[in-house]
Length: 420
Ligand SMILES: *Cc1c(COP(=O)(O)O)cnc(C)c1O
Picture 1 (cartoon, rainbow, N blue to C red):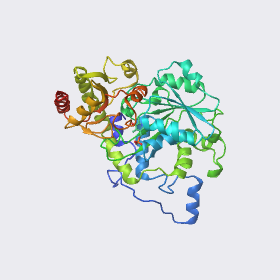
Picture 2: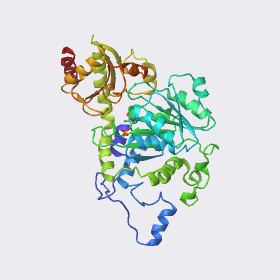
Picture 3: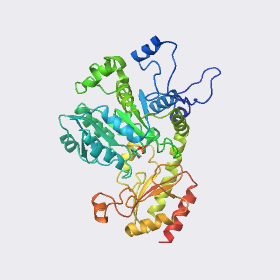
């Protein structure tokens, strides 16, 4: 099946007389006829359902759909994108280990990696995504267990050279994890370029309607966990009846381990109702992504033509620094554009407050056009000098183009710019 068809049909095929749409299984638990059968369920937890802290039939249908869209063998949903990023690392690293991440990633992930994981004894080594292979290789330590990067970075809109990072990670015997949130599997399938694990914040385009915070981890099934660097995958897990994940679950070892250790112990699992809502968003993902992209290109071109705009960042523009990488890795560049307005913070705020259609909110990749001014919101504690040092121009605005008529979006921008 092609992506548009997968969006509608993967993960759930009703049999004779069953509901057309995946039902919402809103139940904490599952019933068995005897104590003996309950006992047997624990012997192989992947065969039957135990408890909704880590599995639910509605959510599992969605997991199968997302795994299919990414071309992976298995997936596990989480209750936020942050939980997905955290588990993707914690499934590989424990206290005393390190991993490498590019600096051009979502701000919330920077905090998770640099502050919270550090408190757990896991070190994140940051590298510039555009650095050469030698520089990146030199950052590895003997305890480095993974490499992490974002396909299309939020909010920097840099495009990752996935093949370069896959090659370096594999040369060091560790997997490459890609946050594919902005591209979605419709515009990029990182496994085709050598990535091993993919994570998403499904709160963005996948849900698409700003109704549901969520995340997902997808396993390509291709990484060789028996290479000697990951004994927790190969040796018996005493907390799970002495199971060896690679021996018992083969290609699905990573996801089964994440579910049976991390999800079992931390319980950041979505409810059946959450899975149902995410599935509704996914059904239209392929057609929405194309539409976001068409609108965004027109808006980006309009911004380019405005005297009041100093800089427009959108990798779908030929003038963009990442245009060539975008051509190689992306079938579209999403709906998100970064602009720098003349007159710094003062004009940025005035422009945003003057918008009537676009909403001012801490969200991105919604079906409705929305804007965020990092200098007033996520980075408001910084002075103008500190903002520049952090790579954020005080006039920078993240403009997330929605699915309204593009002429209405442009009219709204025009009227607000005219007031400056
Ligand atoms: C929003 C976002 C996250 C965090 O996801 P939540 O669902 O908000 O927890 C992670 N990565 C990227 C690229 C994001 O845009």
